[in-house]
Amino acid sequence: MEHFTLGLDIGITSIGWSVIDTDQGKLIDLGVHLFEEANPASDARSNRCARRGIRRRKWRKEQLRRAFIDFGVLSREEIEQPGYLSYTSDTDTLHRPKDETVYHLRKRALHEKVSLRELLLALYNICGTRGHFLMENVNFDSQEGITFDLFRERFYEVIVDVIEILDRDTFEQTVLRPLFEQGKLPKKEINSLKNTGMTEDAEALMQVLCLLSGYKATLSKISESVALPDVSGTVDLLTLIKRDELNDFLEGIIELHDMVEVSKILQQYQYICEAAVDQLERVKEIYLLEKSDPAAYKEEVKAIHSKMKVTDPKHKLRVVKNIENKYPNGLYVKEARAILRKQQTFLSGTDQRCVHRGVHHDHPCAHSLLHRSAFRTGEECLAGKDRKLPLQLCVFGKVSCG
Image 1 (spheres, one colour):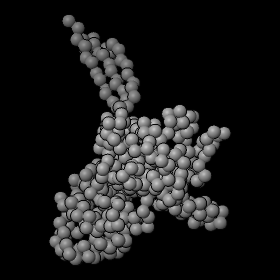
Image 2: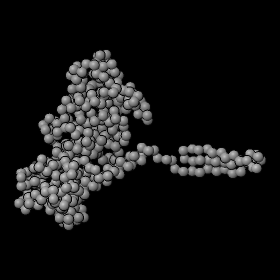
Image 3: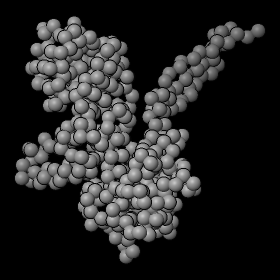
Image 4: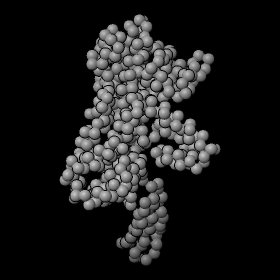
């Protein structure tokens, strides 16, 4: 009976093999099988999340188009014209809005009458970015918005498992409130916390405050449970934001950062589009620096690029859609409501009758649009009893379309 030995060399992208006749002591055959390296599970999850995001965005926009058609605001023939939903379309039959960008249009729609197509374009742009739901307990329609009390409560919820603050009154007065109001703390003040006695976890607290203030921090000094296995050394918050997956603690830190940033924006602006327009105007000034002050231009570009997930090879500076501008859903809803309220005042009697159909639940499209809606029938009478807009849409709220 012949005896053979099979040898295998298993690698990441190949398997080498050989067969030996042990009785005769000779090699029978050998070879190698090559294959592509397996993708990590994180890549598959990232791709799946991207597909889900695209599918949901498409669903929200489709609901918006159907609403305009089903409620008689615009006809299907109008909306289905080539280029009708494109902001830059400029043909014999479709004219580009006079506004420089869609954000300028959204801002104008808050104060002036716009055409029905321009109204659709403004809302179409808003529902393309749903926003996150990390601040659902914040009433963005109120004057207060994000308060220090909300920030303080969330801060303690985030750090509860890794840091204990012994003297909360002093900590809140000298550290937490200045962080909330100013957006960051000087590095010198953070380092001085080591010997204050406010906590026995001073090193961990210092690293957390460094992250929230925009400095680099060592995650393992906060807690081994917080550290990321593929991150060694120091890391800043912008680097963490660019990552697709984080642990719950770091997600909480990013939420605290977002609360501070949104609070600062709300001190200057009522609506997202107003902030976006100012950011775009600022970019024009930066482009002018390229010739007048190249050194200052490079610094400005570097700062903007640090907040972009992908740097544009044509040097296009993205200051609106970047990782810094992660607004909560409530702000998008607030702006959409305000636009609808204002445009409601310009509707003719015929338009008002078409619009009024939209608030009745027996309308073919009404139930699906009002389900889990960000705008509630009865609770949101946008401009009087007989002049309710139909666009009380779930497209601006949470979506469960699979």
